[in-house]
Image 1 (cartoon, rainbow, N blue to C red):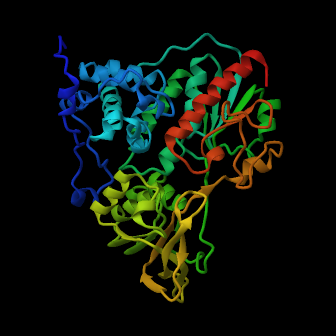
Image 2 (cartoon, helix red, strand yellow):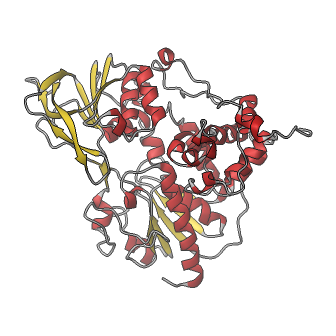
Image 3 (cartoon, rainbow, N blue to C red):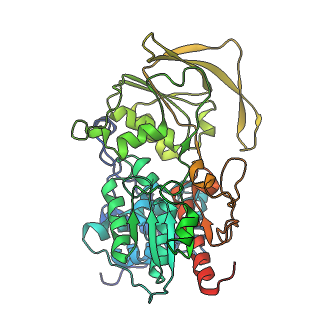
Length: 476
C-alpha cells in the first residue's frame, strides 16, 4: 500500500469514533437480515488510526482470549487486512463470530485508554471487518497441524467453548470428535442468537473450517443417553473429555398460569425461530403461535433477542418487563438501544405475579406488580421489592420468559463422580478446567452459569492447554 504518513498522538485524538452503518429501524423490523452493515475499508482504516498503539496495552488484558489488539489494528491502518486477520487467528479462530457478539464495551473497549476522555477504539467493529474481508474474498487459510500425537479427545457440546477446544487441539495433532445433542453444531450461536445479530451462514463457515482441519462432528448424540462419559473413555478409547454443554435448562418464574398456551421459555422460542427457522414458515414447517401482543420478561441479552425477534415475527406490540431499572439491566448497551429504536416498550420496575388465561387455556393477560429498589443483593445490584397495592394487568397473547438458565442435569446424573455446586454447575480448577474426574475437563456456561460467548471461548483455550499438558505428561 506504499508508505503512509505517521500520525502524531494529537492527530489521532482528533479523529472521532467511526459509527457502523446500520439498516434503518423501520426497515429492519420487517426482515431478519443483519442490523449493522459493516465498515467499508475507508471507515476501517480511519477507525484504526484512532489506536494509540500503547506500549503496555490494557485492551489485551481485557480480552479473554488475549488477542494482540494493537497488532491487528496497526495492520488495518496500513491497509493489510489479511495480515490483520492472521494476527487475530493466532489466538481466536472465530473472529467473524466474536466481532459480532462479544460484549466489547465491557471487555477490551472498556480498558481502552482513549475511553477515559473520548470514545474507545471500535475494536469489535474492526475485528468483524477483517474477518468478513477474509471470508468474502475466499482467503480463509487452513492452519497447519502438528504431527499426529496418537491420542483421542471427546468434546461434548458444539458451542463456543467446545469449538475452541476442538480448534486448539486439532492443530496440536490430536484426534478430536465433537458430540452434539442437537441436529446442527454451533450451540447458542445457532439456537440462541438471532439471525439479525449473527447470520447462521457465518457460523456454518467457521464450523466448516474445523471440519477441514479434521475435527469430526457427530450430531443428534446425547451424552448421558446415547453413551455416557465412562463409555466414551472406557469403550471408545477417548483419552480425555471436555464438557461444554452450556446452560440449556431454562428457569421459570414459578407463578400461576405458566402452563397456559402462549407462555414460552426464551430457549424454546428462540430455538424455534433460529435453529428451526420458524420465521421462514411455511418453507420450514416449524410453527409459532401467531401473536399480536407479546410480553418478554427479563433484562439480559436473551430478553433483547427474544423481544426483537418477536417484532420481526409480526407482533404489533412488544413489552419488555424488567423488575429493576434501566441502569441495572445486564444487556449490552447496543442491544438495548437497538430494541428501543425498533419499538420495544420497556416496562421497568415491574414484575409478573400471574399469567391469566381464557376458557380454552390460552394466555390473555399478565398480572404485574410495581417494584422499588432496596439494598444491593449478591450481584451488587439493588434488590427489587414489591410495592403493595400496585397490581395491574397487561393484555398479551404470548409471554416469553428470559430470566436465565441452569445446567441440564442429564449428563451429570450419569456421571456422579463429577462434582457440582448447588446450582448444578461443574466445579473446576479455573486455571486448567480440570473437574474432579480424571481426564475430564469443562468450561463455558456449564461451569459459569449463563455468561458470554467469549468467556466460554476463553475457558476452551485454558482447557485445551491443560488437556495437551495432561496427555503429554499423564500428570493429573
